[in-house]
Amino acid sequence: MASPELWLEVISWVKTLFEATKAAIDLRTTYENHRRDHATIEESKRVAAAFTTYTEEEVQSLLRRLEGCRKRFISEGGGKERAQCICSVLREAAIGNGGTLPDIDDWQSIFDQLHCTREG
Image (cartoon, rainbow, N blue to C red):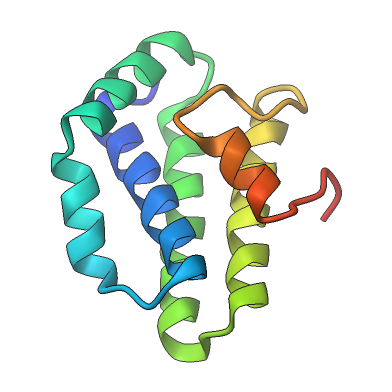
């Protein structure tokens, strides 16, 4: 079972990177704002309790993928590539949830807004 703290990092990065697909933002400041946001902290606790089938390693894998997206955002830019990177992370989360995107934060809305597809 993954900890609320680890889920907080993952949820905060998904929010931050999604915002970066829409506008030029300071990634670190935006991430830190999400990490301190009461609603995001509460959601991370809910997710940790609700999604006990995700192992620490699986959630760490999501976080590593998000960190890779962040690095690519800095070096490459480009909205479409940014969206594809986030979509790939959300698809990985769905695979870990039996093929369905888990009900976490605004992930379904982000998935839809980025026009992610179920296939890679």
